[in-house]
Length: 53
Ligand code: FES
Image (cartoon, rainbow, N blue to C red; front, side, top):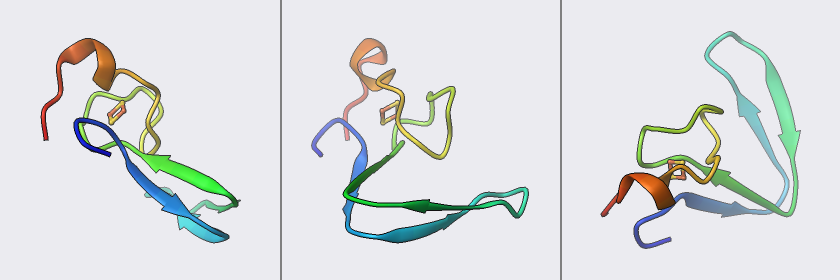
């Protein structure tokens, strides 16, 4: 999304940096602004920090 997260549609497996794997379906929003408190996922912080990109 412009000025927001990377949206991935479909069934995916996300492997976290600690090795944990999580199954996601439908829509998964990955943080692009770097400020999320729930990385790698978007938590909406980009709307507050004025992220442009
Ligand atoms: S893109 Fe949404 S919190 Fe970073």
